[in-house]
Length: 82
Image 1: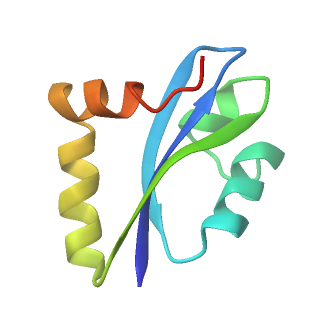
Image 2: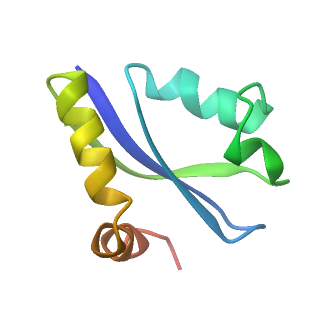
């Protein structure tokens, strides 16, 4: 089982969309900046705003790509708490 997820950093006003098998470990890695890449550039805490379960990695990658599109990002933005 794979999880497609979106996290939000209120301090930086940034969204990140990814996929993983262990969402708790991945969120911890984003917040501890142990993953090199996009999220490690920004100060502040990343909070989970959206998750979706899929059966295979190929489905997860396909859904991740959909959520990274313009319409997908607009959908994800509706999950940001006020």
